[in-house]
Image (cartoon, rainbow, N blue to C red):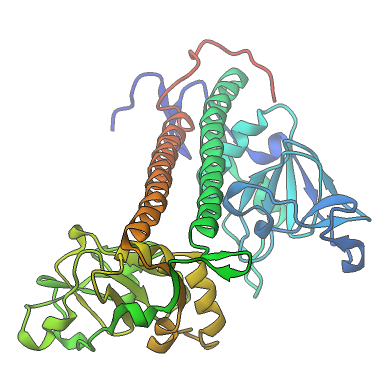
Length: 414
């Protein structure tokens, strides 16, 4: 294949002619972490922050949850922390300050390269550090890290790429914090709007009900897997319900050939609330069906909740069932087995507070639903920013798009 002018073929693929291929060992220092005895650790903020592994930086944000009064190995701000032991081997995070690090981690420190550029380069393909250990515990050696091959443009271009990606990261982090704040606001609104008590007494016009008293609760039909088809009426299984929404991915969705009179009662309707009754996310897998989910049939081990009468707004009931209140209820009752599950009785006996006036139910549901819609819009925007960042990384870190002219060779390391 003919190369585009200004590019060359290398062992790592096609790159700009002025970019180099190097081993990480050319510029980095590796600092190995060490274990801190439990008696020197705490969670009350005494001493210095202590990072023990990937559990301390979920979703790319370092959590200050552990501290030590007797630190061992310290990393610096702007070091790249690399997990070298355990199932998370190869996971990366950029340090934002000084930390004590455990032996599960190593700190990568650059001398002349732009640290943020190297971080994004390694982050783009974390499988670059796939574990080579053959024992029971996966791990990386110093040689595994130092011998990795990377590509490096000029310092000026490294800085330009790092700054562009950092700007997008700042947008993503800002939006992530805003979403978390909006969720907290909604949680506070629920605690206020769904609370029927005043000075320890039930307010006039409110009643306390079991879910089964005000809804028609139905569990699914045991459709035989031998009758599953790829076309027809979709079967709503537990795997199709994911934390507040349905998932009709082709790989997990099965169908039934046609609707017959004996299964008509399992037909689902718009507005129905569905709850998966088993699995690792039992109590967290729930959704309210939209028109786009239909037609569909209810499969066993999934519960369908539908309002019993015009007196009860199904959208108000949804705010209870699709909430942390219901999740905590299920957590307290689910079986502690290989596959946790809840029973129809567990769902039936869920207690909720209900205004007797349907108009008030509707007003409360509308307020909370509007908050949900705002959060959903922000989450859509967040997903878009993440896609943009991914596209930028694929283009900038391979040299397909250049931010600095090839003849520019100057720059400063971060």
